[in-house]
Image 1: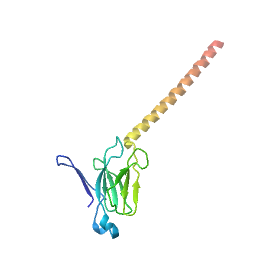
Image 2: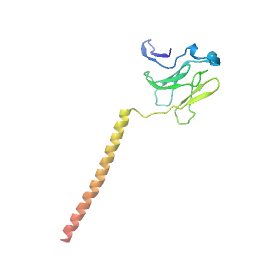
Image 3: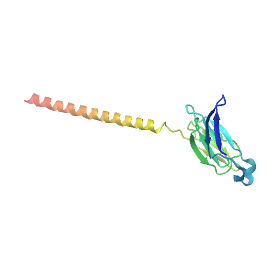
Image 4: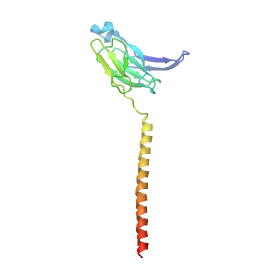
Length: 158
């Protein structure tokens, strides 16, 4: 049915999410039916990043965050025949996802995104303010200094 739940060590439900990672035998036909492998796996993408949950169904892979938020949903070209494998095949320090299928291995690149939109906006605003202040200070300092020099020259020639 695609439902994914997180339960704490004391048995209390942390969160519950419906996902596209469902498995119903009628939706998988042919030779894939006997070898379909729906799974739930833990993914440690990179140091400093929260652990993620990979939910694999008959035709999709869903990446969930620690609070149950959906980070990505990917439609698979065929039914998986094993658990997803975490491997850094792009050599960027972040674990990517390889999904084994009957006739192929499909790799998905995981990209680390910097912070939230609010944090990016605040940082961008701070950069603009600093640049404006530097330009005003530089232009204002040079202009005032030049004016002082001109006045000083006028007084010395009088």
